[in-house]
Image 1 (cartoon, helix red, strand yellow):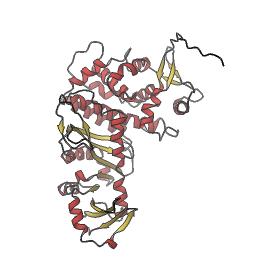
Image 2 (tube, helix red, strand yellow):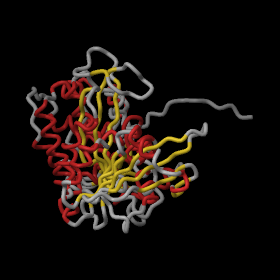
Image 3 (cartoon, one colour):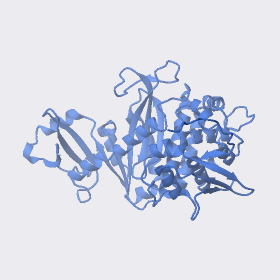
Image 4 (cartoon, one colour):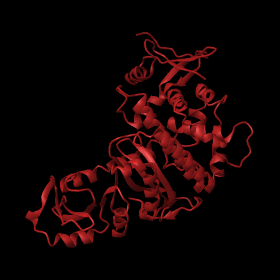
Length: 430
């Protein structure tokens, strides 16, 4: 057997993440970065502008950096991407930490306006002729140290007694788009943001609302009767919301015979009460537990029986798992569970940038990866695996080529999706 020896090679050819360069090019094509130029933050600018630092954070999110410390290592070698963003190199983590610490309440207002502008110009759901379903939900972020601003004790599943924050979001599940978002102390109940989420959603989807093609779907946290009555007052709005009180559901169930229910699933049955004068439908859901126990919940909807039966309403409500999956992606893939700073507005700003970047990834996948095997691939694979595929950079006077070695199945799929016809290369103009 021949002996293997290891030695170094002084290879100086530049490489880059083909994923990062491609998404950045796409971002320029749809003018994703343009609104960020108007962002203002009072801080000294020496080598890098605030605008460049914001773009650096976006690049770090695209590359799956789990903390600001990762920026030095992961973005340090991304010279082409930095050049595309008009920088020689990306700033180091200390520069990013500073900009996050300087964020304030006005910064959040600016980022919300930037998101609105980008969303209204590029959203897939906004330009859809179909009925759009928007999910409302809340998810907790734990911040155990006492140094975190405005962190309070609240409901955090499996982490009783912990302090942190609550993320309230509106999410267009079919198109995987973040529509709106708020960050609050951990003791904030989700229904406290219902009016804000509704205001933003009905503004963005005014045409859908007018045409009766906007549906809100929400869990029991939003299901108090005063909230249901509030939803009923919005002309054109449709909804399916789980009732707040399980006791009320159990009390109503006592008046219903078991043979009156209609089977909806292997261990679930539904029964619909008479429709109210206002058109509100109340559906009792009976679920058989693993130990043989029966539990009851209510579903409220104003969608007519002609459009959605009680059984269909049951399955439609369960479709809200899309927003739950998104929160999991936001925490584990984009790393929002790893709070980048102890500053409340710094955390708030970072999450805004994460959610806007997520929409960018969604649009890139839907448009640039359409009709390819990567079109239905998960965000986790794109961010954690595709981002690590390297390409060799060849610079010319007016053009830059990135050549990707055909070394793995994922690399071949990326090539098939992004390469220009007849060439196994990516081309960029900077």
